[in-house]
Image 1 (cartoon, rainbow, N blue to C red):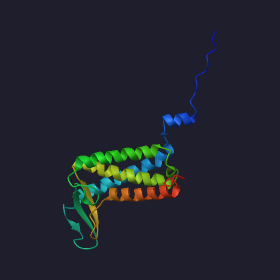
Image 2: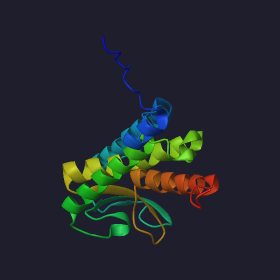
Image 3: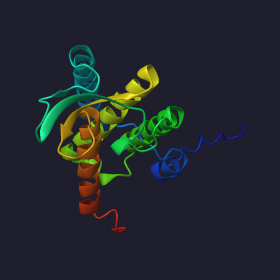
Length: 178
């Protein structure tokens, strides 16, 4: 009888080359929770604005900080006005990139709790505005400070999340290839 060799099992480095993304519940749990909180808070505040503040109304009518009811058919700072299909595709791609980052062990900054919080903030903000664009054809903005364009909870979450992740990424040494 011929001796049957046992099947060769690929070692972890071979597996990593074939499947570079590793599922990580630890990386995903906190980020998913933060994302859900941001989406919920964003959608709730936008609903309240659409319900209780008339379109173009500002409260107070003068001052540095105001609550307003604005509808933005563009992106941040009102760029790319009336480009909803492009912005929906771009936002969807951004969420896919965020998911790939979340599932990857290639980014050491996600080992840090603050990195996972940043990821959740960025994902939640992106999803919150994507929901508005897909459902209403515009994003409801309501926070206005001085001369700057109005923004919302989702915008704030994206900015804070991206700054946090960029800071942690640069600090981790990965940007310099260390």
